[in-house]
Length: 622
Image 1: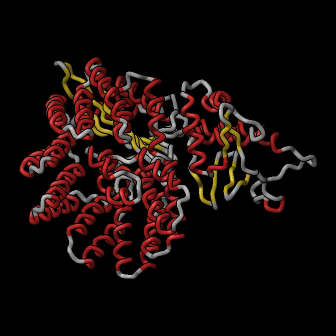
Image 2: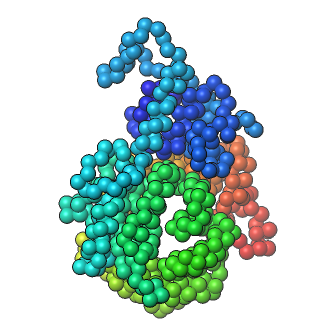
Image 3: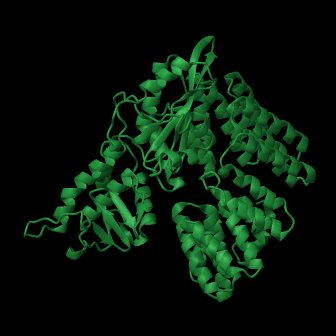
């Protein structure tokens, strides 16, 4: 065991701890940290790191920089020093536990001589890298439910794939389940494909409490493409941090199995599911795309990441690639999906007429693909275009259709979402009766389908927004915080924590406001809320301390909205304290990161703080 700062690193097992809590490492981070510590006395070039960590995998030098950044974000900026044009070197002092502190289950060496730290590191680093590789191993031989496999030799568990319609394709689905190289989890006792698609994270936590595996499930359909009967597999891989969903066509069950096996082989060898920071998955997806440029599943995920990062130029090029590739492969779902992505790009660019054209094309193609689950989402996008024009009857038409398509696809969560969106749009357009009618309809559907509490969070949140009195708002906010938190609803949980803190502060209940931050484990958001609370409590020095921590963490993790709000908060606090330290950094960050909508919302503050010139801004539309 090695100690540095308030961390300890068990090189033999590849485990990193901070204050007795495990800090999750991806296999690549594990290898890289071991290499840096082992080679602490020398500067490692990018080529050295690529050779030792990635070995025969083809990756860019940018991947090295990103993984170094990830380790800095997890440990400390000072942990790894960059030597321009030379490489990287470990900087923190390492220590081993004192002799008296050796754990009882560890047997100290009886050798009377003292082995040097570099020698120890050299001997055990090989074991660490081997363990990292072993943990993510996907078995290459067929394993049935009766086959016993060592726990560490698996990374994917199967919740048996189901036929879309009960009683159809039973033998084909059973054959597919029997040939998949995973351990099977019986749906009668644990879960089912339907449960995984309804509540993926909740089901995942029930089945994999230790968060060390992936869960695979899906649905099998039979369809016709150009008068030929084919099988369609809609599959989902669920991990602790994120999921993967794709669509495969095959002429036989064995064809589906072979395609799925190749997909999972590639994914479990990557770091996609284990990266702590979402923005770093973009480079991982680009690497997967380079390895297999014809993989439409990978291309779809890459485009969606690019759109989320506002990288519109690259996203546009990739969408054109997807349109061409889906036509070459005669993949009906992805032919429609590519048009949907193109429409979403135009919506992001405020080109709503062009978006409408591509959405209608996507909907027609998805009708031909006979896949209602995705067509329900396309209908929601059509409602978004109508919402831009404040056309409530058209919004209703598309969201009614979305709900109907979701019901035909047996996707209750998507159906409920359609009614929730109807309520939200009614609220925005000041339709008092409809906003409650649709929200109650969504709540009734939740009860009818017996979905878990995580799905109630958004419903209670909107009831709180609709209420007029502080007491009723507070009551619904507290009901939100009682529900299970998932990656999908975390934004609701955090938004409610912030708004409830404001209510408490307005009632001089500062202790209750501060107590809310104890449930926020993500550092950037936790310090974000603490900064706002202490500023309201007129404690600017404490507010500045938390704002700076939040700002720096958000920058490293590419959480732009947090970084922007904290940069603005730091400029406000600096003006109050008459302290211009780092003000130029905050202004530069805002000018280079802020999107037009954020600038419009904060225009008055930005002008007052000298971040933008109001006269120049009047000359152009932000």
